[in-house]
Length: 209
Ligand code: PRP
Ligand code: URA
Image 1 (spheres, rainbow, N blue to C red):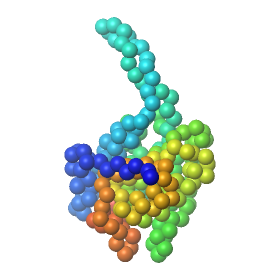
Image 2 (cartoon, rainbow, N blue to C red):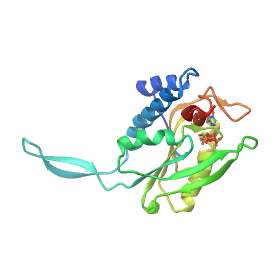
Image 3 (cartoon, rainbow, N blue to C red):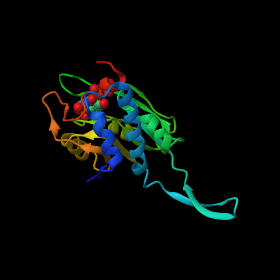
């Protein structure tokens, strides 16, 4: 069974409370989603391999460590995943970014693909799929499936709020994909929205409602 890591860090929880608040406007919402993604990246990259190097400080030689040639791709699920990318790039500046466009059909809640553009050397990269919301898990499992079909083996999923239903769906479909979330909420409502969640992440990020 894959691992689910929930972030109980005070700064993440504080920022998430403001993100959830219906009175928070798009500008603040965007800034905080970016900041939470940046803070979460710190933990998501914890297993990156390092190697020893020697550098010369103004005082003398130092044997120290650097990340050893890890190739990473950040894969936002459009649209809402875009809100997490810049925060992650501040921590992993050399990552490439691939995009998978999916929207949920409002009737069936099934994901519909409308765009996919991945780095040319994707086969050599580890993938971190990002999307603020893991609700039914349909979008995330579809995105993981696209990457698996292209031979990518090492995949992580990072979201801001997850529903138990979505976690279960991903774990049942792919038991090797670890899930990172700032919070796991109670359940989904009849429209497939996370309760209490934060509403429609894409609309709140981009001010489209
Ligand atoms: C939202 C969200 C996820 C998806 C989660 O996107 O950003 O991609 O729903 O739901 P699921 O787990 O049930 O698939 P939406 O379809 O609203 O598209 P948008 O990002 O373009 O607003
Ligand atoms: N997509 C969202 O944007 N919010 C939810 O609560 C569920 C799916």
